[in-house]
Image 1 (cartoon, rainbow over the protein chains, first blue to last red):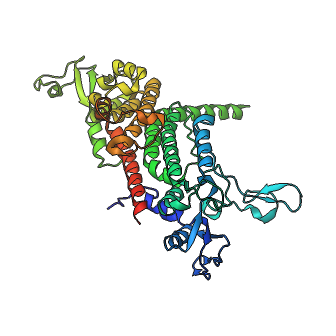
Image 2: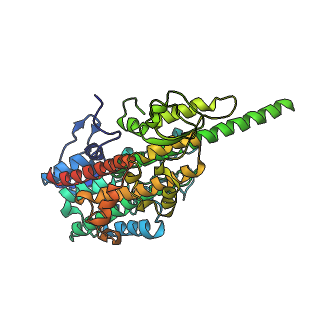
Image 3: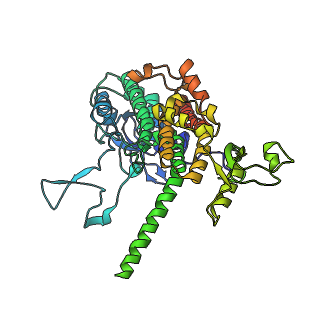
Amino acid sequence: MALPLPPGLTHPEVAFLAEMELVTVVPRQRLEPIDLLGGKTPPLRPPHRTDLPLWLALLLKKQRRANILPPPWLHPASLADIIHRETKVTPEAFSEPPPAPARADVSQPGRARRQGVDQEGDDGGIIMSAPFRPACTADAPAGYLPYHWQEVAEALLAHAGDDVTAGTAGATVSSAGEVRGLIRDLVEVRAAKMRSSTAQLEGFGAGLMSLRGVGAMELAESRGFVLGVVDGVRRIGASVEGARREAEEEREGEESDEDMGI
Amino acid sequence: MSYYDIDSILTQSEKIPCTFQLDIPDLGYLDNTPTQPLKAGTKVNLPLWLAEMLVIANSGDAEGKSFVTFDLPPALGNDVVQALKADPRAVPLRDQSPHFYGLGTHMMDLSEEQEMAAVLRKTFVTRAAEVALHARKVGGVGHRGKGPEEGSNLGIGGAGEEFLRGLDEWERKLFRKAHDGAKSGKEWMEGVKKH
């Protein structure tokens, strides 16, 4: 019997993977490093900030042993800015994924360079992608949605709602309700965009759909639909495509014959 | 497409209007006159699998004279194509044929109509966006946002239901996929708060 699951990851699987994201916590208690398969966790020394995986941070939060610092992009102002960009500035594209972190260049003082981007010369051009690039810590850039934005936002709102604050560090005003509303709006806006993005497949030769900046959870939700549309368009265009390809091959054949003649 | 694909089998049994150009003995039963030969010029509705075979067998004729010609089935007739050009969303495809796109692709294989491909493609893509919209609305998924476009009640009541009744098999599959995605998303959202 065939596996009943559709291709790709399901929602719970995506949520599980998102728990590997690092978030910043402010511990309330000391905790010695824990020896895990992925290496030791950093020791917790209150009140120093530490980056921990989301699952451990949530566990400590539930036990009231730590507070989670929400990533800057979860700030209401940042979310409002992203919604503005999604709806007004570039209504036909998804907002961009976060840029690679920059670091001061030792060889050229005064200039910063992107980390993890392929560059000639040093360290073989390792390209860092989502899970290995801290995108949900307190150092992450504001105004960009990381790959696991929806999962992390939902988890933080559900379990650490009192830590999601409007101010910067140390503010007391909880803005969980506002953030929740903004996240809802963002989900709706982007879902509508995902639906209308398939309309770009309308003309022949224009079958391009840019999914840059789409989050993991949105992919899990729309994968079946988008693949279905693309497959349907392929099947409708199959006979025309076949005829076109034959004609092209014939033309190429003629040209090569002429070349031979010359 | 699998050998046992039930949709493929049903598509193959759609009827195509064919005209015989020659008298053919012993085929009279196709026209309900078993004792007579089949006359030239008789119009018979043949299932797609048979019509396909006859047309393919036909093309190899040395004299270039075909013994059978076929027309487009009424589901893909001029009226329907014009209506689809005007507004793809207003045509209930299921009333034309439950396997509209399957039939369309088969007919394009036989006759290579460029325009038909463009019309079908535009229809499919335009209707797909609509299908996704309905798939998200049905069963109360969505409807919680505050944006301007959430005010519509497309999924509920008259227009939406009528549109959904007019989906052909491809679109029904698409609807199911989109709905499954939205549904599991909603289930996950509810699950986050529990544990």
